[in-house]
Length: 377
Image (cartoon, rainbow, N blue to C red; front, side):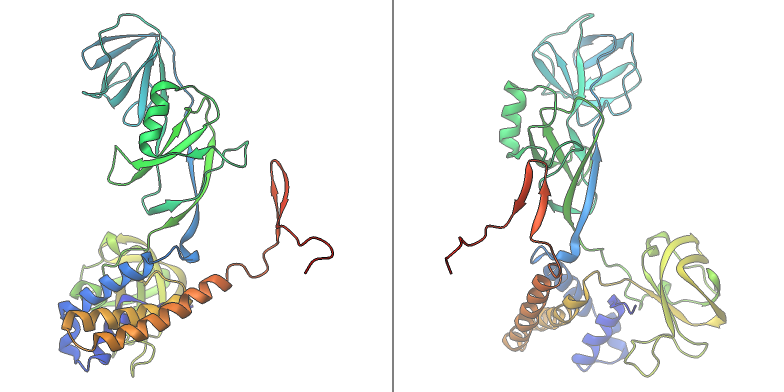
């Protein structure tokens, strides 16, 4: 499999804009690629980014009794579970408070705004968790499914979720769900309303974001020194430049005389492989194996995380953004970009449904597409 990489796009823009080797460090070329990458990968829900996700719910906890002093709640006769922090709620009687943090096995701290009205002493309680972080590459998702049902309730807005939780917050199979900002990170979380009453898996399909770009292959630390390869282990000599951010990047191997160029260049790469781990500043492990003699030149670059049928549109989008940044021929290159984008969207519609059955199984019975009545056309 041949990868389309950040390096390839930089070289293509240098060639297309009649640049020379000195242009490899031009900021407008890199800016155009990053803007094109962000636009193309998010312009629609491409089938390529549909993946399977899962969260595991926690069973409510109610062992022992609690006493509070201001926002501090102390547990007697039990131990706060490890998840009793951000995303958890404490229910005392009919009052619900939001947990801000867990400071020890016996102490939690409540949110300064969403706390208890008054201090309590030695009372029963229910601690439950209804907010679960979504994957770090999450963009949007479809209806989730529990272990026992085809669907896990209806989507509601965050405002509706707050109102439902406030006036009718019971346990059981989740009746509603929403997506909110994860209170514990910069990402997103799913909130289940009708909090889970047991530990179970909640599965869903979601659209992920594309892998970010960092290494173009032109940076000094992406090609310094030379390498040797034995099996899946690649060892660097003459430099100490491998860093942990290179895991998932593409290692391209050239010759002892030349750094690896694009496949259409006069000095094309000899082989390429995904870096699965960075073991030290002088050693990485790759996804496949091979043998490369010492003193071989190389480069490390990031893959362009798009499907094959999206690659031409990606290339055209880069041309468009570079023309836009430089302020020339914008209408002409935009028309070509739109042509390639349309073709990519058409292929995205055709490929995933090839061979799909018209009938699926639903836990409420068989479901199939409606058929014409007999005797009608």
